Image 1 (tube, rainbow, N blue to C red):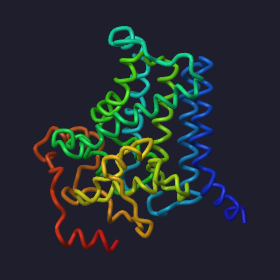
Image 2: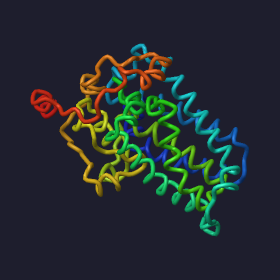
Image 3: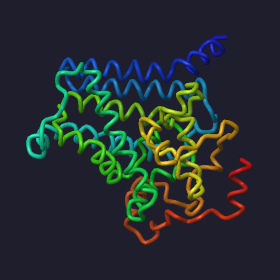
Image 4: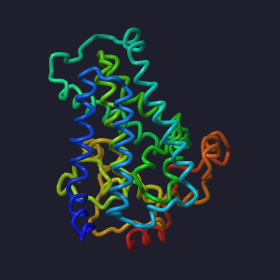
Length: 305
């Protein structure tokens, strides 16, 4: 009975809790000038909520069980979150040296400033993500993320640190050039982490028509289809606005995803260890093509699944 009651709460309440609740607390903490340790604690709480929701209402039960990838994913998440925090820490130095003109709307309500930062960062990150599927040298590093065979919140943070740095730089650089304040950057860092947890979540939640606008798990699963070309869709981090404009939006309510459809068909034996994944982009074997067209059989298989 308890499980019967909790599942509808997660199905329809988990996303508002994370987007409005967790992000709202992050905005409030950043606006008040609270210690960054409070934001770290909030992020850990968000990760805990992610794991709890996935276990109470999984989309695919199999994806809740580690497949030799648990320690690797923790390592990726730890390193990438540390990089995110370091990048926030150096923003005052960057702002003092590279700000071109202070156009930042300091008079706006703080929450609106964070929303503006989210939308601007979304464009830079989305375009970098799109380019990473088209340019070979970028794909080498982005391929680490696409090697995943199970789709759950924590592996949203599973990225090569150099690619993570590139994406975040593309998102934050325009903001710094126009005078991004440190407290807004702190809130933005939390919203990015929360978004990655939601976007890759194994929780079987629902957001209704918003799935055509917000870049959450229902749409992002299509991005992780293993066939080149077929998975080159839904690049947005926060929204799908730019995908609609780029013509890369895709959604099929009838499709059901399993591990057999995830990963990279062109490179099914991609290294699974953390250090091996860090090294793979620098090896000759890391040059799997970004534009390998799927075979006719693969296209038919993708259409059937």
